[in-house]
Length: 292
Image (tube, rainbow, N blue to C red; front, side):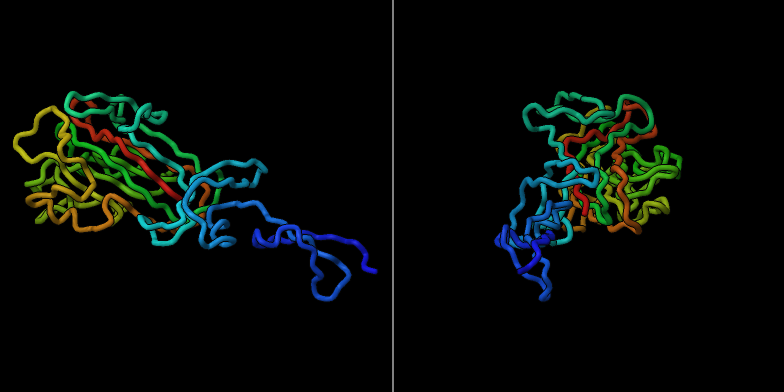
C-alpha cells in the first residue's frame, strides 16, 4: 500500500480535488487551486477569462479585490493588467483623490481636480506591493489661463518642471513614467507652447524624453482667465494650426511605458504649474492607471 503522504499542486480549476500519482513514487499529490497573486495568473489558468474583479493574494497573506483588464486593448494588446487608479469626475458622487482640490467652473457641468497652491500638488495610488515593469493609463484635463508647457523655468523632476500632469514612481529623485503637458496656444510655437508644435524649438527635459503628450485648449488670442472647456487636453482631438503635429499618436490619450527595472513603488500623480491656480492650471477629470 502507498503511504498516504500528500503534497499540494496547483492546476487548472477543472482538476480541483483530484488525487494523482506522480512519477511512480509512493507520494500522492492533491490538486488544489492556488490563489491568484496577480491578474496574469488568472489568464494563465483560464485564457478566456474576461475583464472584471478578481481576488488577489498579497505576499503578506491579505486578500484584495482588484479590477483586471484581460484584453489590454488600450495598452499592449495583451491582458493581465491590474487597475490601480480610476477617477471620472462626471460620475455621480465622484470626489477628488487625497492631495488634490475640488474645483468648480461655470462653463462645465461637473467638478474638476487640481491644486490648492503654487507648484505641484500630489496624490498617490497604491500598487499593493506588487511587482511591475509596465505602466499604462490615461488622463484628461483642461486648460485654465496661460499654461506654459515646459516653459516653467525649471528642469528638475522633483519640482514644477511642467504646467500639466506628472506621473512618476519612487523618490530622491522620482522616476519618470509620463507627462501630460499643457501648452499656451494651438497656433504658436514659442517657448510657452508645446514642443511638438510644428516649428517649435522648445527643449523637453532629458528625463521626459519622448514620454509625453502635449496639447493646448486655447484657440484664440489673447488668453483669458477662464477654463477652456470646449477642447479637453490630451485626447488627440481639435488639434488645430501648429498643434496638429502633437496629435498624431492614435493611442491618445492612452500611454504605455516599459520601465527599466522591476518596482513595487506606489505611483504618484502631480498636478503642477509655475504659478498659482488662479492664473494657470490644468485641472483634470479623468484618471485611469494600470500596472503589469
